[in-house]
Image 1 (spheres, rainbow, N blue to C red):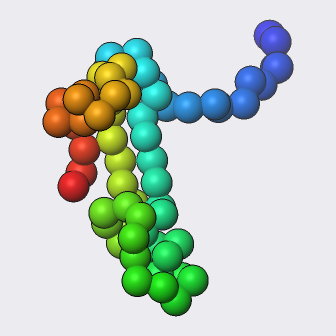
Image 2: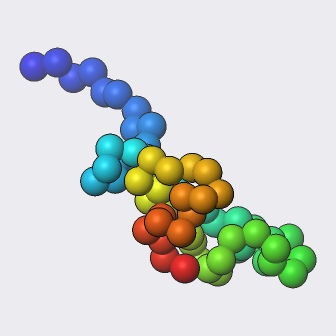
Length: 64
């Protein structure tokens, strides 16, 4: 069998788009500054359902 490996580029959500993932909040804490990025101290995870404009944000599935 073919043993060729393909690197993982993203994890696909049920809508066929990539999940969004961020640890920006924790990065700010690690830098010793008041967090101005992100929402959760561990990680932020979201699915956009393909919508990426400001008007689409309300429809995102997210953990904040």
